[in-house]
Image (tube, rainbow, N blue to C red; front, side):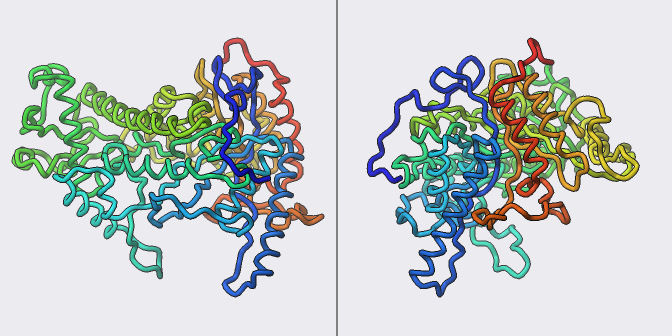
Length: 553
């Protein structure tokens, strides 16, 4: 299975976008996918002998082989996963090249690459969401960008962010800061670290295939982030919780944006109608407001600017969205979108330079809408759009939400749809989708409204949650929508653990049902009835047996 050289395949071996859809060697491609982590963890013990470790690796590989076979038997031809070679959550991810694993050593990289090679042998394709597993950082990462004037302040800001984190109960204080913060979009060092960490993942070489991940045609979708929903979270005030260094640099950019757009304060006043007392374009004292909710004045100005400090004295302590003209709110949106998309475009340029797969196969800038039309706009600037939807099989009686307590129409609409989403329509508590109007939406219609003309559409996650009396019809209703709108990928969430897959009765286990905060009811590993329905629907989808609507709405 292993290859000794990195022999990069011909361009024709890669899935690409043509005429708004996925294609391979001139043929339209549709992928029916399963989502999950890599199987085959040998679960070593510290006192295992070499023979015991070898036996555990063999058993783990047999399990991985059985799961690949199971995926094939169920009609899947695609896998989406989150693993990133060499990264570990809250641990600082090294930028230097990692020591290669030894094939069969049972390490995480060995497990992943073995499984990927098995998938490749069976003709599967893979969506890698692992690029955004970026690890964490320390003040010593300051050297990633040579900017002496900001070194000390950046170090102090990262140290402040680390100190402000709460460790889990019983755990020691954290010594690093997760790289995925709102500021990675505008801070040059955080962006440079993001690119460097992503490149380290893409450069990883699979010893079983002989190819770097960035060059392997197995990977046919590359993802910059998973459910980041950056604009929505920024409007909700996520940036206000950052250390002052990052917050102030954002507000400085906001004022620079206004100076570029309007060139003079007179032009700005003409567009907005008025400014707050003490606000001045030339002095850079324009508050970064409005946000979606109430905005604290102290959090919305640059406290490193002495003139901004003086200007704040005449302001209220808090402002709401209604305190500002619509034109100002529109500028906030435009500024955030420009900041976000520009950042993603820089990441895109970097990723597409790393290898043949990253260059030829489609890249998505994020996944999902997040109740945010701005996400949909951002998706349209890249190779494809990717949205999801989940539904429930059981629910309580409908309870009218307290809409009067919410500050704006958007939040009221989301609350109303959220109450409807979880509510039963059967007296015994079940939700029967066949007795509802046609569609998949349980609340906001993310999947129904997400596809865009001229762009491939990827359903990156979907499922109906157990307990559910009416579950087997969901794949068929999803097939109908996917056919009408001519989708390209559907991914099913989530393939749960199957530690006994290699045994004769390895899938004869009770179905997973959500019992706590973790929604294991989305698992379908042991649901034979839904699996049969999914297999039929998957065959129809992959073969394009149902023709798309001429002009789907």
